[in-house]
Image (cartoon, rainbow, N blue to C red; front, side):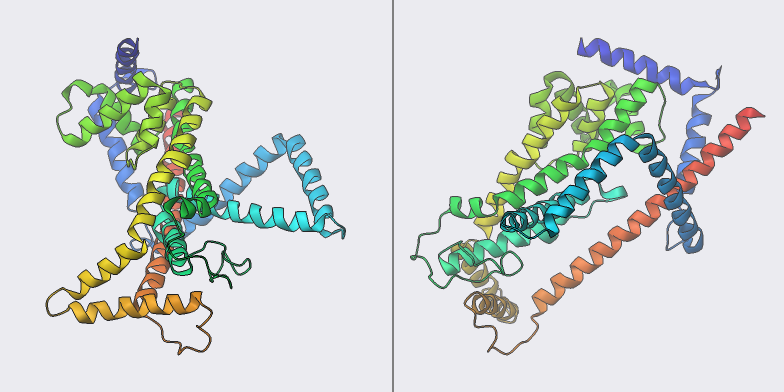
Length: 405
């Protein structure tokens, strides 16, 4: 059945590419035109055409706001229900009473979960490029908890200031009482929320491919066009990248739920292709999202947590710092800032930072600047992506006008 479905899809793709406005034309000329238009759109970036890019970005933002407003108006009954619910929650939040302790607790947990879900979505959906929030936020958070747990011999950090700042409790635990499972349990909530966010971020390729299949349209999306070309030339695939993509597509198409689960459970840069495949072959939503959620939020997240916790466990960190010092010539000079940074963190954990001289370590300075640079690049990529979307609107409008002539 899967092979027959693939054959039918290949024939449909060839027919769609040969047919243009009811007439059969040269597919090569159509492909050349699309390629030329795509290159024109990709040239609209801030560092090449700043004024046009900013103009298109603002116009695309206004059009998106208009479209969202119309959609909300069509679903005004749901909007009104949500506003009433928000009004009830706001009243419960501000009215004094015995329930306030539960309200504050739920507020804290909700904001903490929403923060990590949002970072997970940013990492996955990216609006043109992904912000690597695991490397920038979740990974360092898990590493900080790991180092603190081994230093304090406890994970019962006082709240507040945790999670904004980690400090050892007044009564520290027994030496050697910290286990791998203790640290995993401490960071489980934020890690699972981040994984759930990455699963939500995988939905746009699925919905795009599903809508294209149901409507019979051929969206001008590079990943979807690449997917259709891969289906068309499946038998002739020779290079490793093409064979890897084809293997992912076959696994998801033939195995179903467990194939999606396998792809989602490991670090897989080709998972967007799995979402497109599921949407194209009309895999049920809950089959796709359920497998993706389990794979990313539970299985993959525990693998990544284990890697970070083991890497930053006390004896491993000490061995790595010793190895840095063993590098000929430059070893001692490189080892010094690492030792200073670790010692400063230990002092903070034991409430000794107030009396210590405050000197900025170049490691923390470098990491802060790296975070700023990556966030700025992410914002620039959003501006470029939205400007290119508006350019695509203009090209489509021009084509529709040519057809009506």
